[in-house]
Image 1 (cartoon, rainbow, N blue to C red):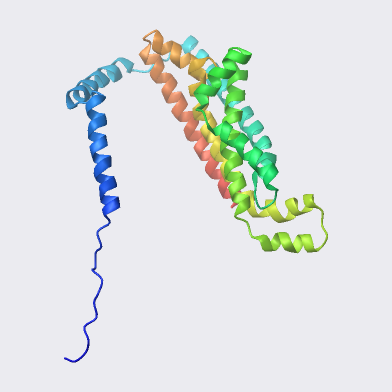
Image 2: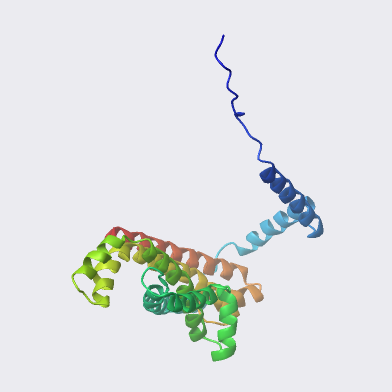
Length: 264
């Protein structure tokens, strides 16, 4: 054969930096396991303790007075979730617009994005502890804490959704001489409304779950009742509360799916 044999690149080129990174990760995982006292014996002991703990929770408590207390806590949890979600959604709309870099100048977007980053910097329980110290125990601290968390989530995703919209519609509306608010109402919001509704419904569902956690630190809701039952070793009543929380979250999930279908 007179045809020149052309050199072919190998079918598989080893990626040594990636291999080294995976090896380093495996070594660090082994090192972390050794210093954190993670062992199979402790896991087996934990499974046995867990089985006995679940046995002490059965059957669920159904005493009328305790059920009334639980329903009051569930109702307060729902109120906290609704109010914090409403406030978070109303505040996230203008904050998300101000953070969109394709609509606003840099001197306005950077401080707004810094505010969003601050809202996302801490867990809801940490924020709830701060508000409990500021305004005292009760539902107000929970509402404020979850409002801050809602702004951090919804405003960030809303700003990113605005930055991904088509610029052609904005240019067409601007060409008619429409003012800035009309550009927002007729050029921006119609393109991101469905996604914004999705963000809002997801955050409402998340606030229902998080309102049980902030209640543990004194920010109102069913979390305080659940923590008190745990401290009193009233595990059958604790199971009743957990089942009620699961039912509430399932109802919230169904509502979220219905809202998404309406706006799709």
